[in-house]
Length: 130
Image (cartoon, rainbow, N blue to C red; front, side, top):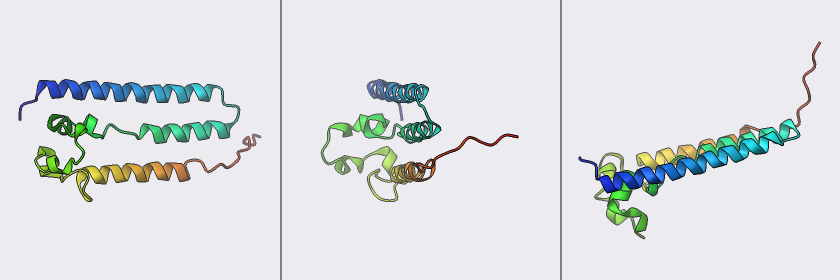
């Protein structure tokens, strides 16, 4: 399958926008860390950063096939998705057990795990040194 140049350019533009937004979020969080007073504040900020960084470019605006088929402007994408070359191999994204759905669900699980486990509002004391 040959690349459609217009679709390629739109995909690249959208990925560049995603990257800039992600970098801005990371930079802003790191800047907040510079002003943190406690370790607990740092831990909360780092937890938020880890979760934010898992917002991967997996939406229809960052998918070659969705862009090519014009799915970002469609109310009922499943009608068009049935003709998607990606769906032919991986299932329609919105359907349970499709490759995309498994990836998205795993990301949500990881984000929730980080939220619950990375830092749980415990208080830290300085380590004792001999």
